[in-house]
Image 1 (cartoon, one colour):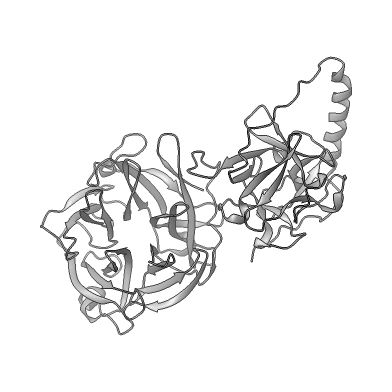
Image 2: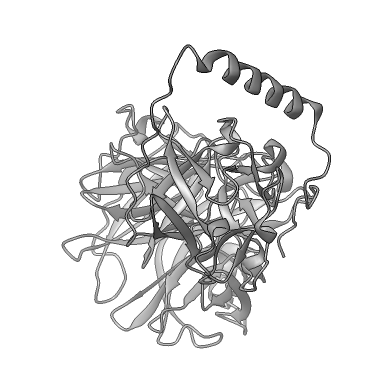
Length: 489
């Protein structure tokens, strides 16, 4: 459940600052009216066939139907952007330059509660009656944002009391041109405008405690997630939001891995892909701080607990090697060739070529694709978008609960084997990397990332740590700026 920010639900008593600002504005309008005749505002160009996310200039948060309600009278609030249907709005033409804003989730429209004309009146959703209290004029500002002026009251849509909190309510108020009354209209598609700050993880429910998550789409359109645990832990979801536990890949234990795990059945950092009618899962066997490690392959036709068959060793590292065979990631290039990138600390991230018919290595060549001179780098994941392969890696330290310093970095290349460089042209093999996501506020150590190309765009999965030290599932969308560099929103 979302937690609604506790602000007064009707007009209530405002801060004296608001009253003072209002008085000043009134005086200035009276004094200046004889000196300057204001030109008419020009409404922004609106595509009535498109869906928009509306971002508040002050808070950076999106207009949201609270708790995904579908009922008349449900509160409209602001929330961290996740592009869910409850944050998507269609502009319906009411004529005369006015529009209703219809929720894609509920089919209802923004409505000034009880047709109020008072400052501070609630904004709710209601069945579309095309009432004047449901109609808003889109007014350009001089900075690329717009104001939404209600036809019935003449007041501006705003975030109440300049809140920056998830759940901060929306209201109407006299138009003061405040940043909390200004909105950015983002047409959905492939976004190119990064948010002003790192977003919080998107809304997920159910069984969401994971570490080192990796996800693939199922033939039915659902999601299968594998993560570190005894016998490789599994979760499933039908909608990418609600998750449930689904047992483990190897509920009977993993004796073949015991030489690398000191007898433990805990396996690390699986990578899961559905291709050619079956699931392929590469996974790690090791102990903390050691590079006596191995990567194995398992396959399944259903992905269900207990259905997996171990196909044997893919690559191992010994204490005498300068690399660590953990954190595997399968990437299939545009020519249909299979590659496995992997690695942690030591000399960094490596890559080997695989035979698609077996999933095993084709030769003994080991390529170096990223490194920090022995420093903390691991969990590689390569994802293709447009003309580039993007390599995501995790810098710094995981596995320390709320003290973890993991952060997600990225470089790109037009070739799957590199060279990968960051935004400044620094090679990832020379310690380069452009930061994609880092800890902020109560979100600690986001990392061990994976990306899938879903029906609504590229989706980032990762784990993060809460203040109680637990590791949890993070999901956000990925956009690409004008130069083709990814950002998280």
